[in-house]
Length: 64
Image (tube, rainbow, N blue to C red):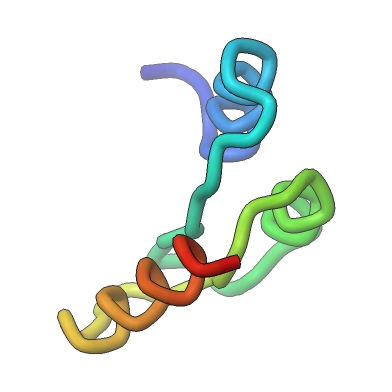
């Protein structure tokens, strides 16, 4: 609570530098999303999403 996905991902990377991630939000893609992707996060998926969509994003990220 109190921090967004980018800050969460930055903190995770301090502990696990090779951590893989996908981004999910109900908001449109922002500069913060692009910054997380620059740091290594994978696909951005906008809510609501189909289970197939998130499943494919996870599969793609794990195979990267």
